[in-house]
Length: 313
Image (cartoon, rainbow, N blue to C red; front, side, top):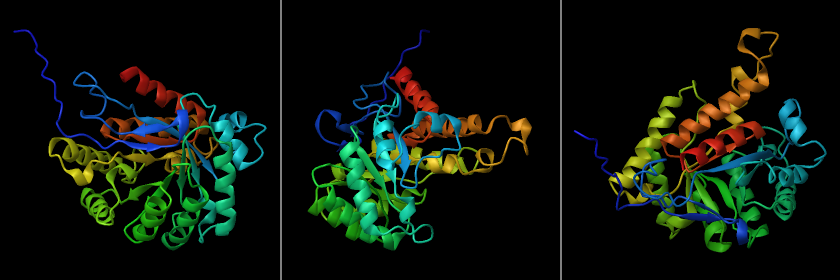
């Protein structure tokens, strides 16, 4: 008996969220099929690959990264250079230097840097906060005000600070926000419900479900993303129909495999290639699970993952 393909297309769809302005606007979501199921239906907006630039500067200890950003002496210059990286769809500025448990950079300095970067990049801009709940509560509203008209995505609003961030970013200044939870479908839905109760439309929200690197409890990450996407499409759960973004560059370059030297573990091979492998394997896995965007660091990782996406579209 010949095989007869039966398309699995849903009446439900993932909400479409736009970031950026002008001819470089990026659309996330919008699909009515499972990840990469282009044989079942059109995928309006392929998954996107972003490049992370930290406010503390790029990692000059990694040869491939150092070579790509040669001559880019400031963070803003590096962000502008990242816009030319093959396969890049957006830039993610990580304000890790603002963390009170780290360098604790003043809010005014972080806002000034965001304005500088926003003025130089030619791709849509995502801004990742300090990771400190109280600091981000103050930081994001000021960034949202300073970048009016840029339509940036602010990562991320958590249950402890979503009210201040959502009101300032979306209602006051027309930005987009990421709703961040800790790898749990129920927590993700609960936060989305809370945000929606404030009058925030789903088309202004992207989910950041959290991440772990492949080999480090990653199976739970993948299954959570799959469950969220399945509930959104198959069960038409409107509180889980926002697109998903997964920043993973920082995680990939901080595990043992990408930190220990070649002298200590020669059998593991070159350190730089290990980092690229961790980024690529994790990124492809979360994309197949259902993420609509990933954030990476290494130029080779960005090119490889974007090539993978193009090959399956």
